[in-house]
Length: 426
Image (spheres, rainbow, N blue to C red):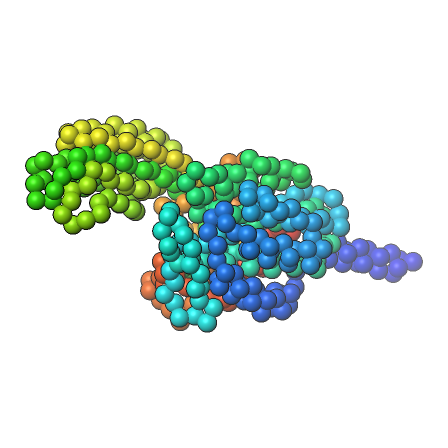
């Protein structure tokens, strides 16, 4: 009887281990060809923010094929899948962004994007130039892995989010709208995890930072009104192009002379200028569009205040008029300190301790921050650069030459799957 009792105890321990243990690596190895297939399909069929209709259909079809409960049309085109474990427990969310960018691809890949669309009234190529195709594929992989390993306590909510790059002007979208529409409710989410593939970091690496990791983002539009004249008689004009040059120079002094850069980084960038129609006509109007990135709330407010003071004043000094409109795009991506510490062993187990490294804060921005404003969240970078390429030579995100290695995705699935299960068992 004693031997039988010991046998029963061992059996119980094995049963508990099967509920709370890791998923076998074979699950991830077998999945890799599907990850590549999904990503190549998505890369060839990119869609702009708030227009991810076919992408949503592709995701929905996959989730339903796995028997997952699916919600569609969240924040326009978002998809939510709910996987309920075999035992009651907490709720954890995993998020992937779906949208592509108005970028014309220059790579000679067999799955290169040839899609053309219209953005801000202009014809443009469309490309997954930031790796969101990989993010969607990774979360589709997590869905398959977890539905095959459901003997866990709790619920996993898969959030496929549209418009991370920002909704079109005049529209709502992205994480902020998903939160507004209740994506973190029914069932109520206790914590959320997200990743981003990273060009410039080798495959197999994970980088992270507790606390403030990525900057807040604000989009601004400056409209300058001058006086039109013939290009040969500039004294009869109030030239908005010259005025805009002075405004741009002034804005740069807000960074170089008024921002305490030893405290945190800050950036003001003009990304678009439109004015004029002919070489010998000084135009009447000019529009500039740009971004503000800050890692500190006080610096964010200071820059907003000083820009509102500076822009109209500089224009007035040159007899022109200028208006400024600033809109929030994302808050600081802030990794919950206790959650980050709690989940670090999972990252190290998934990638190997030597491959998990602390990073400095970046002036990139992510609207994952809106989920983190509501509940504890943890966001990290997954290396995407091929091992035979120098990290310093990797093309930047948001460029026509952006490229990532398909082999990076398996670690993404492994890490997100184990983050979810480890969080639920704790």
